Length: 115
Length: 111
Image (cartoon, rainbow over all chains, first blue to last red; front, side, top):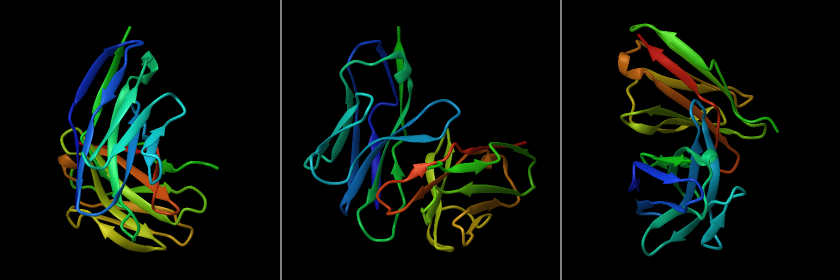
């Protein structure tokens, strides 16, 4: 079984400031890791994922996350946020291989970017 | 490619009724999963279908059921609706299991 903890339920920041959204996970098996973003009244959009290889993964809109196996973390960072980044962000894991495609999510972090 | 589509987008029902939600996966994706999202419980896995068979099931009562058709489209049904079933129901599809893509969701309100 897996579990995901997002350490901050809300993160308010000013525009152009850096931000870090923290995510820790627990699992007895190898996992893939994901960050999804949800804008109001919408579904989940995949932001970035770690499957294998380089532990630093990047998205097309400037976010990055680093997989740290020893600390079982997958924190999300952006050096300079925009108003349009205001949304809820979910960290998720699923086990590698096999036929269990279930995603386990954290409770979410609401990022609010203020002018 | 078209994304995951869900219909209807919004539903209002009363307690005791039943409801059916529909999900069309991305073309070529044979796995469809359903999730319930509520403010209190967050995102919870309901079940997953692959090639018309339920492979995995979350911890929900038997009132929640689903099925998948030969074209991979999936439906979920909730019978005897309760107020606590009010939620956003999300469908996701995947081809290989390593990345799931979500639809816009169906917002169910039970009065």
